[in-house]
Length: 484
Ligand code: ADP
Ligand code: GLC
Image 1: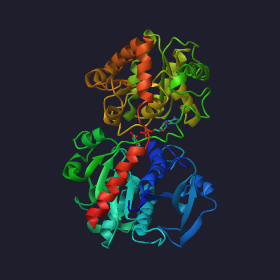
Image 2: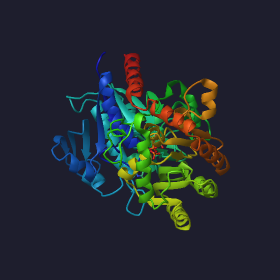
Image 3: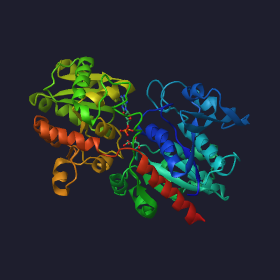
Image 4: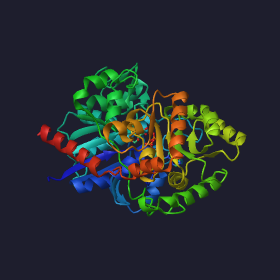
């Protein structure tokens, strides 16, 4: 196996900085790739949390003026991850969420902040760090989308490029004037370049210029080639269909392991699923729910955004109550949804429990203690919480979209294909269809044999990165061999 060197570029990396699944992927994939002969280093911005954790990193380069202020490139490692860190205090030394101010609005200079990241990625691609000259530059989401564009417009021999779409809804759109300050030629302001409805889009740059495009599930790879799923890029993706593929995400099965999880009340495996009841009791306590083993407990761990369809779940509360179910929701995001969920909890004490916020430890307890995990997304590139649910024997109830379609086997499908069922899928993505799935799940829950089979089907599902990392390794090798 020829060793391959890949520079990954990501704006968040678990366990250092995380707002969603992108961080999980960027944090887990490099570790899984080692077994496939891929040496991956990840470039990320030097936010305060990064600088704290990489206090001993080596300075590789220093510039008096990098995009308007002093900057440095550092190399270091953290938790098994080899990292390059772009330390540019005037762009990244800001507390809190990496993309938005404390008031929740995008930083006005996000274009500059992430152009700077991509510029250095391209330079590393050209050999800036002799000890690590990558064969491939792998850009994740719009924040890294300019990397393939810089490499293209630099017009020099360059490594292969891969652009991975984690979410079509975030497109990195900016005013076209930005071109003048990020070192790209004005000729890039073209419909075959970065131009997008009169402005520019960093995501488009990546989609246009990367040698390969991937997204995080085969179904999402198909959906984004439609006008609706493509969210403006359907046409471009249809044109580039020959280089577009879907590779499912995995999860880190060490971090998510119910047999060793330090964050749950009682550890368990397939042999001792009954211990889940003890986790359920603790979860009910933490969410102020009535203590009852008989009431099916539905869990949700999610960003609260339109994508996730949680407004539809609110509409099904009458069904949840009438079916004798309980709901424990952990999430944060849209103010309106936060308020509505908190009001629902106040109106239904003991039955609906809501925690607004971001809490890794509580997320583990929800996976371990809820009977079913609900993911009613309008679109879902892959989704990770349903994979964690499979591993923790919480039965997923999901909409039939994107990666949810690809990772969950509905009871009906299992009958037809002889595969083990792992959950419930509903379509269309409406409150009515979700209510129907909740009723079906409730009936199944009260038949202990059926429910146990669903749980065991989940536990037997491979949700690790092992094979999926192999798909990325094969993609890199194929790309390198075709470029010669
Ligand atoms: P997305 O990236 O669209 O938010 P994913 O399902 O791919 O969706 O990944 C979400 C990740 O973030 C999962 O690891 C999930 O456990 C975690 N997560 C989401 N919301 C919360 C929260 N409020 N508290 C803790 N973890 C959360
Ligand atoms: C995005 C998607 C989610 C996916 C994650 C990691 O945030 O919304 O579906 O699992 O990226 O790829």
